[in-house]
Image (tube, rainbow, N blue to C red; front, side, top):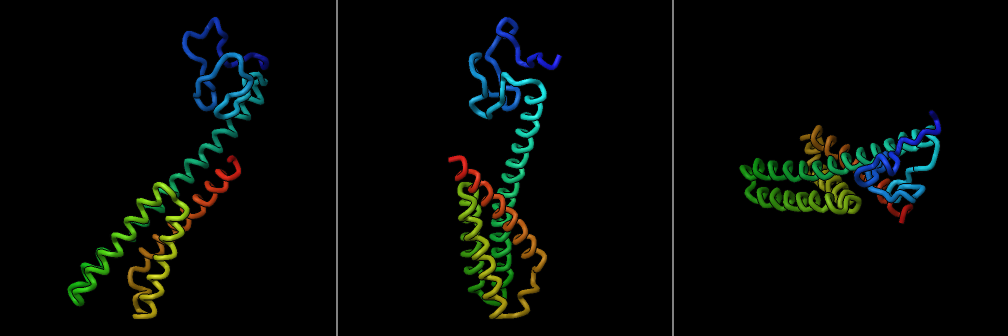
Amino acid sequence: MENESIEPTENEQTGPLICNACDAEYATHVAYCTVCGYPFDADAKTKSAFVAAYLLKKTGKDEAGTNMRKASNALFGAAVLYLVSGVVGSFQEPEALWVGVALGVVFSGLAIWARHQALPAIISGIALFVLLILVMAVLEPLTIFSGILWKVLILVFLIRGLKSARDARAEEVGMG
């Protein structure tokens, strides 16, 4: 039974042949899937080990993509945070509204950029966010505690996204 192939024979197949690991179509004369490298001619144990490793790697990529999306959402969160603080601050100082709107637009732009080029956008977002926190802390030290939970959450998501984007970039460079 171990030598039995899990791929259909040409007589059993009615449509295109499909890889068991990645679902890509393949020709009957290939030894490996051209998309994922699945070994068609290997024994069942080797095939099972390949599929398990492939799924683990794919799951890791899915998690990295999720972390990068969360980082982009954190940048949108920063945009909302600055917009709201600008509106609230405008009751005391009218120019605070324009500062809040400008920062909201900048962080929204970074969030959109992060959907296309995660690494540079997230690095820029972290740098700007930390710089703004530091500037506000110097100008008015008590602001460091104002909205601390939001600031920490945004930074956590940005740092996780940064790690995932850096790993994805390293993987791209290694493959290309």
